[in-house]
Length: 480
Image (cartoon, rainbow, N blue to C red; front, side, top):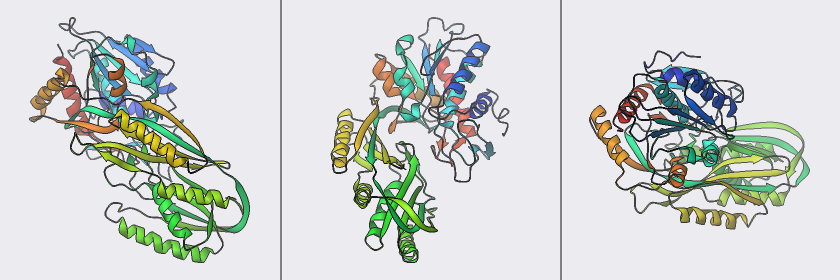
């Protein structure tokens, strides 16, 4: 592993490297939670670890700040685990392979997890330091944020006395975020009947798409591999006979799938392949500016007997993938350029007896989110399936006359020479849960520059980390 210890004298990168060496994908929180507990014990800090593996660490106010209001510093412990096809990493047991590329930290063939590992690292650096000036710090490390903010939902916020919160889960260093969308997960499970059929197996893999975060990149025109698969299958069905063995693409509701693999059984492999190549060339030309790296692959397998989906179910699947709503639903009428409501088909998974489609829904308005769920339920009423909704979390609504917003803008301008942009985002943040649970909580979200989050191209700007960390410690110094 690349040694990051000397990148920053504050020890932020030391802690980030230690975090990256601990498996901490969503749902695998025990080790990283224990790491935070050991940190608190080593530095003789009071802490609480709950049944959801959330950890709260308390650091007393420094001299002169004893009467100042406490401040919450908050980040989440889990990361989205994505890897390239040639990566042999076991996310349950292996750490990441970090490397430095100019002004960036990256991970070889995997996501980096700077969302939100760099927040945890910055907070630990604050907790460790004996040279900073600040009010009482209530450091909150939540779990399983990426799969529905589960830890934050289970956290007993009554433990917290602070009315100011700095969330460090933002991704643009010239911006202070002041509002975010709420959301939910929508799952449709289609029962599969299979029959035997002889034919040639042809595997079509739609790969090389950009993918990305279903909130932050939903307005970037990035192509969803699962939705594209529906378009491909519908076109091919009109000109070449085939049956479906399996379709698999994406494994997280909140990530735009960059790859989808279709395993098909065809009567005439040569004819099917020729027609498929022609249509894929058309798609490549159509998407040339949006998806420059799109590189589909067609593989011809053996001629044998296969368990295929019953033709009626095949037709239902093609209809579903072709017609399902996906992407932007509404733009905000109040905030220029803000996506108000959207959905993303993030996972399409085929097993022997069922196919699962998992969507992430988002909206800055509760009523619009409820309507989107109703719309999907109505749509899937045309296809025999079971429907499940979960992971509901509230939006974080803009707070007028926020003292913390004003103070951050003042401190940021002093350090950087200009005021940060004030933005609402379409992605979900745990701020919505905290502001709903803690009355009159004044909250902002900030962070260093991250790029291509939730993809294998994720990178963290080194100089940006130092800048935002310095702004953060100055902000704490001014929280009197």
